[in-house]
Length: 428
Image (cartoon, rainbow, N blue to C red; front, side, top):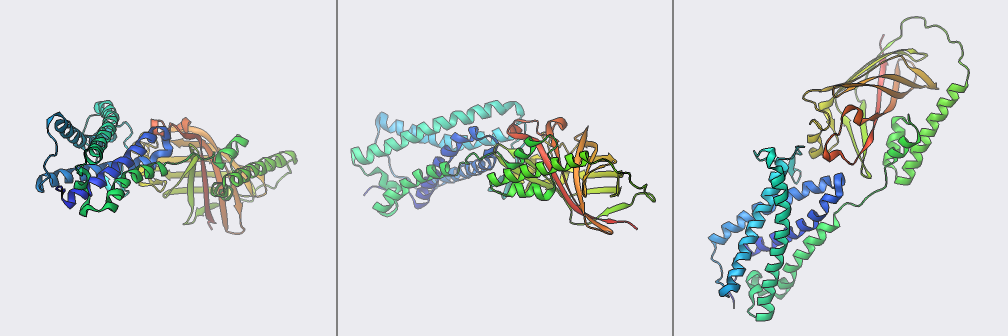
């Protein structure tokens, strides 16, 4: 009976082989996925670091536990040894060059291993990025070639020469395990292909934006469009945009009636806790949605005399979140909000106009990332007495404010939908 490797070596061998097959399946597709592969890219990094750790453990076991003697000498034995050395170099080099690639990228994407353990960036100069990127790609192809040579050599020994070489890596000389363990490699590859994201149809939000230059709807309508199925969402968004256009047309067609002059100064309103400012943007067939947890608003307005409105909204841009630790780590950077230099965004409007019953439009100035541009918002008021519910939205052209200016933003839609909902109480 041929000598066998230790149980620890056997477990590490097949685990690493299955993970490598998974990485090969995923790595081939990552470049073509664009932003849709963001989450998969993070998983790819996590699995890569896992392979690095397991390889270090495998090297330790290799020198800790006795290994079976070589079955073949001469040039064939030397080639087998060279393939083994090459595989170890690949299993160490591929994760390390990947780590270096991420660490030297222009856009610093934080890495949380499996969403839990933060991985620090390596202290490498950005000038080494191209070397790391080319090395990572080259090692992948070399690794595949070595992988195939290793499998071919094992089959040559086990099947053609009949020396039972593969039994060295099978516990208990089990025929079932002889089939099951190599099958793990195929399963790893198939798992990598199975989790690749498929393209989806354009989100409803884009449909609404295309229907009107000012196609902004109230919060409930936006969220309904985003949460429905694609066809229903598009229909809902289109209907909402049509309703708004109809309301505007009606308001324009009805002759302006003479209104009473306000009896006194317009009332001020205090925003109540529990409000929300959210944002959504199309991303290569998907939708990224988030919100700001810290913001304030100063509102003065007589609903019967909207021209009296004086509105100022201040948003803490460091409070932005899309519910994903990786993406949240990118938002404060220069590519998106540049919060170190511009921690706050403001919207200021003097006066508003009625567009229908309880519906208004305010044209003001938005200052974001140090850039000030004209911006229109729409909002609706419901309720009576001293408390009103406010819902509204706006469509912002992100390029005008230099938001999303890097390679990772290439698949983002040009328009960002902002929605808000809160209650306001009239001050005495």
